Length: 140
Image (cartoon, rainbow, N blue to C red):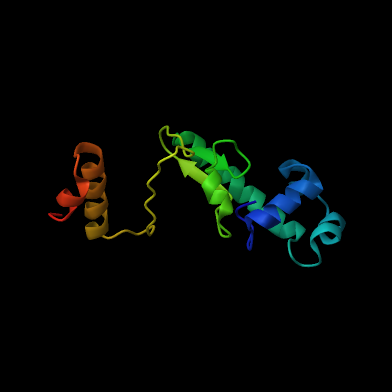
């Protein structure tokens, strides 16, 4: 679903409510799509293309040990559900509680600069290994 544009949490939630499952949505015929979503919003071709890409993505995710987290999963960050433009799917390496009481998130570009990578590395190191991270960051 996240490969379909434009797709939001509210639209995805409505699709799941009306179709009952992701599988039923992807198996819907054109008449069902038009009846529920309106003409031209999501076509059979768009669904087939998105499903093919999702199958390829699933293979890559599995072979690289990445954990996909769909917005309906229990471990999807509950606070993120309050954002209008929250992603339908998150991808995670390792283990963590995304619904912990205290969370720090770092949002950046897919093509980070050397300076950005260096700063984030130092920032995280300061948070993990010092009692006064703010003082340490002034020396970064």
